Image (cartoon, rainbow, N blue to C red; front, side, top):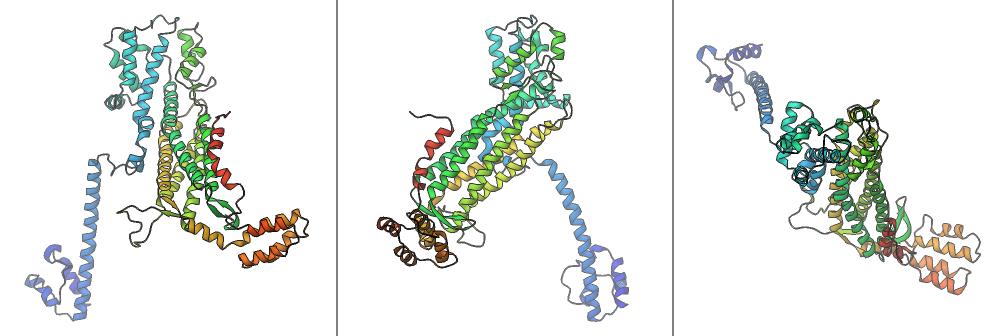
Length: 549
């Protein structure tokens, strides 16, 4: 009761009268902080400390609440002042990893999209000037053509910012491009007369679908496919350099017939090259048929023009294959195929990353260290295969995004809904994480150093793998139940070089065959693995369509 009464006294005193959480030795000291009429009654030490704890907790709670509220206010205020940088970017591709993926930005960014929209709008005006049945747009002079081409070639970040300023007024990104071009051309003596033929008979998707197609086309040819080739080439080099190095195979995680390190690398190089070929063969499609794919407005304005032919000529002039049967949008089926193919390439690379990770764990590879680098914050000895782990992680993120793109984009309600628009803006995310993964894999490969001693040691301890060739030779020479005999000798038992040689000596087979088996070791029992590895680049060239005389 005395504590209760005393706490009520304290609670009436202003919070700032005493620093509650300072160490106070006894209630007499506490009393010194208060005016006489507020001093506490005499308390036992136990009661005093109970009171002190109550005071401190109450103060701490109030202080904590104020701190949280202040933190929230500061956080909210500060967030309005943040400028985009490598530290504030929401996507790590635009922050931490920018240096490794920035070459994609020229094609797959908002700037890239606007730049290609400008290209399509300008090229369409030029195309109209070449159609004789449209006298309102006469053929342009060389000066006018050069001026229009300059709008494309010289399109800058400042130009893109100007388009974005216009978009703030129009709230329509494609219309903003049209208005931008009209502003830039209104003072030109020829082009200024035909400004209303910018975006003539077009729906926004006529412009957008070709811009997206060009983004993908250029990003693939200039960045993604060359990066894939780098990975394939690096793995092919690994195959050829290590073609002769014997390695214990593992099926189901257990010792199996030997191979060579190079041949196992060759498998991945071949698989990746096959998938890369499929990616490069995907036809990128485009449409230019108006609001619902029927050239409705075109034929009302100029009924005597073969608009499907004009559209096909225009689309193919951009290096895009023409799709004649469309609603408002190009249906994106080619995108689904393309992204699925990239996913499969990435899946194969995940398989490679995991295998290399395992070989590093087994000691088959050492990793070259770099001065100053740290593998673990607490274990100084660690040299972790982080490049392959980062590659695997980014491939997972890439495939998740690309999978959604490939599954969602071919689906659109009736003649068109807008769900594809926001999704298409994320193409660069899937490609960016893929590119980052390829770069990480290449970095990891560059740090690998083969540990031949470890590879050989594993083979020295697995003489049981010679059971396969021995029973196969026994079959050739009619020895009954060869498989069963070897199973009895090797399965679940410790097998040594001596025990295996003793078994061979007792076989009833020709002398030359027996001598061949006696000379066989786990290191030499690799079949055609070395030759397969050495020929990998020839095989890849054949996959890519090269022919040799």
